Image (cartoon, rainbow, N blue to C red):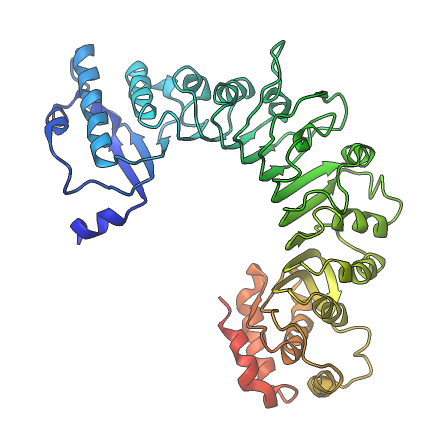
Length: 466
């Protein structure tokens, strides 16, 4: 089985005691072995997990012999995975600088990273400090670093600016954003091949004092942009990529939105390739700089007018819901609509599905029967719905509910089943994770109740939701 299956592997994980690599003699002969019959020919990613046996006897060692052992190990890895594109290193202990044989471990990492110097790096700052990496590698295509320090990450990215295609980083401060473009007195950096930029920081900051970069066009080929805070004084991130941007996920403060509007950044005709749009207004100033919810919603929907996936994270009032319903007819390309913080009535959901012919997925906080169903007896609701509404939502297949109140679930289940009666292709309802068992059990009992038992064979398909 191994001789066949190993050729299919795309990722290889190796866990071993680093001291075996340094001090044992078992690896030296490996560099002379032919691996043609057992190499992972299609593996693209290597993940190493190094540990050290505490209390293990550490023999007398000669530096040149240790380096030879490391060389033999790296040569073995090269034979085993000749087409590897990305290397990730994890250590069970924190920080290589705490190791008694730090220099050997750094030498081992440097040799491993040299196997893919222009391809990829995944790293967790808690296991391998970025400061070490910046002194040993450059010309990367992929960087994914968690919990790193600002200076070395910025330096590592700028060293690879001409080749970098993907940059994903999590830091404690948002200062990294501007340091990617300009550091101290240096000229603007340009990342001509960068397709993916995802930056996340964990320190709350308020708008003000962010640098501007007049004339800079750092990301001309950007396709995916995800920022949990906009730490620039102008629209520099969006320059030159209006025709390439496909995925946008932003959390911004009101002052950033004000700047976007002043620059005329998002218009109905800009960003024609955007397919996913999530734009969240952060901060404690309500909807400012928008005068009304309707103005805010209009702004959101104009970002990538032809986008297939829309995420509207704001908690909308009934007025806001009415605004969404009235505007959706102009955005017929929507296939997935996420209103996961907003409670919809059943009639709101019907209007949304009816307005969007391509809609396949709808996300909402919960569903409610009110107000129009008050006058209809509970056991007659299914008859009322079928009699008064034609079949809708030919492509509508999945409803996601995020309700965090158990007392509302009974009403939600009733709404889901009523919706399924007029949306014949609705096959899946994804319930709240915390109430999954309760939700599904209540759905089963409701399907068998007097109000729904005549349609039970058709509705039972919803019970197979995973």
